[in-house]
Image 1 (cartoon, each protein chain N blue to C red):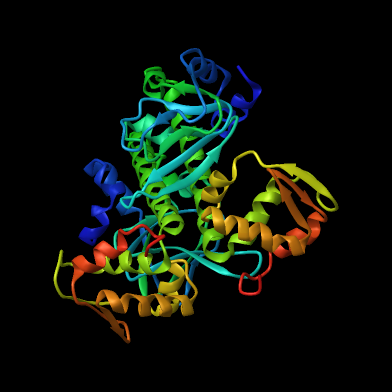
Image 2 (cartoon, one colour):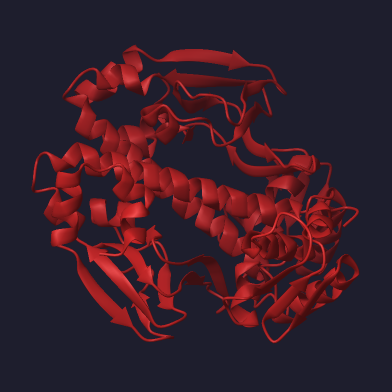
Length: 225
Length: 225
């Protein structure tokens, strides 16, 4: 089992015994890029952990528009509460690269009475983290401009605290635009806007001349940004 | 105890015994309009249910901008998971009208062993509902224009399915703008835009000439809206 899996918040909180029990009954599924992992509204049987690759969580609105709600990578989990409570999946999930997904049947594990308290507490923690991440997203969408949200995302990929940094975008631009709540043409304009802050991009390769300059732009009041 | 309180999803799932136990230890606090109910990052001691009035959940960003994350009214609860797990409050809360808040000490209730399973399941359901609502908000912010989000909000207040409807906005326009993820001047422009769909507003009173016309506008592809 990959280290990253047991690094997820959910697993960290479990005793070795319950963790082993969960993992012994888990089942890995492989998905090709573009494949549907689950659909919004489907009954959820298992909690899902990304073992490798990238997953997009999304919803399709009544008007046909697709909203990207999250992009998940190795070690991140979803559908914990719905698996525990036998609810429907709150979002659809699609493989945006080839990926491997670990399916964990929580109802099955809860047949073991010792596991109940540990697993529900761990799922509550996961839910709390999801809520925090969603609140962060809403905060960003409400108080920051598109170019600032792009800056934040580039800074999250950047390993340096200051100075020159070069990064490779993990997604194609259409998905990145959706993730940041922009149309692809607005994303292009946002990249254009960042030129004056020393950001240049070419086919998914992004060069940041000075990370600290970009950070101070990202934290400006959006009315001035 | 108000009927609305026991109508909340959380209470609906509890047995009479556990519900009575929760409510017998609950404490009502009154807040004047503008008062702070709790601050983001404070240790959370109690789950909170709005008994009367309106509450705004918000965060202040590093740049000083305030993001309104939710507006809650009678019967709606918050900070369930943080109260159960002794975490910090994920948001700040402010009374936007005079209001009464029921404080429920979940740790205290869990001292009663029978309550554990019921209360954690109920908190999980509440968390699942919060996640759904936050996903809805993100979807709206990403795929709809400001004028469409305003239309959705007006439609949610409207009791008629079609034809003429008159509504009174429950908040002042600054808060409404924040709730919808717009600056106050963008909200004014959005109201202006809705004139052609038969919406007129005057000092918090809004008249919709034909609810079905507004609904079809709200559901249009945002690229054409």
